[in-house]
Length: 272
Ligand code: FES
Image 1 (cartoon, rainbow, N blue to C red):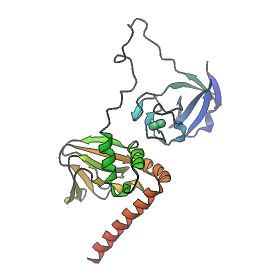
Image 2 (cartoon, rainbow, N blue to C red):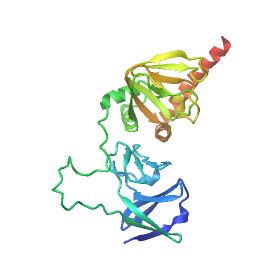
Image 3 (cartoon, helix red, strand yellow):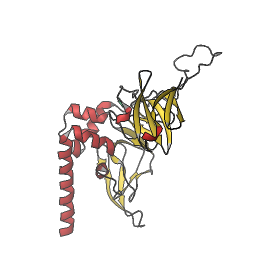
């Protein structure tokens, strides 16, 4: 039976609001004017999802960065791998009513083995060797001086992405979302591709970061980065960094140091 929880008009597009249905925490998100309801408990370690930001139809857990598509409950990005329970949304007048979606079992099927059990989301792929990820993070100037524990915390917020030789990883002029660190392989940093005058300004290998400035704001990338061979990178989104900076003031100090070095280099170039 549907439970009335509040007023539909109180949830503006792009917003998410928490409710309680039969003692369960449920969140309702407004995606482009349509309401979707889902369990407000992250399936990774139980944080409240409605505390996190929304991006389109995706909600991001504020604890360790799991991402879920609120229209279906599926996991878009780990560390969570179990989908969210979803609810049917009814709007009568302005009254918002929610009812759990009942997932029907197939009667004639033999008992499913764990491997054959139906699942709305594939388990997350195994993560890179965790020590190697922490090691890669420790080599990023911005993260230098952070305790092992702090680096471990950061590791939980990272994602990995593989690129084929020749793939463009970031493009000059496009808005960037965050930082990458090369885990394996090699990349080249190229300026001037949009203007038709490409110039390779650096090549980077394992442990070397690029795109740090995108952690601070939505600025266009100042150069393109292309994989010179099959390459795996570690990534961190801006919102994760901003969230962490509130917990680790050391990060803010390191970022200031990185910015100061960049300014000094710019000054040198101007003087030359
Ligand atoms: S509790 Fe949500 S990602 Fe860990």
